Length: 103
Image (cartoon, rainbow, N blue to C red):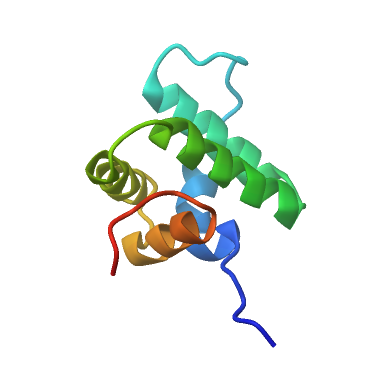
């Protein structure tokens, strides 16, 4: 049996996301509102598949055509912003095709 991959719910700080989440317009005008909208949407869905897809989309959009170093910085920023475990978020990112440093 293969190694189980991480789910987004195992990576992100659910309690914090539930606390900061709020409904925002489709196109948030600033990053803070975008984070709050993501948090609301993430904690409002019951589908693990959708939550995984949401986190993968953020990671892929932010790291598209960027350097490995910039990708590492974004993963660290996202972990800090969502008060989540950076090592777990990094592992999730790698499992989902985000280019990061080896190790």
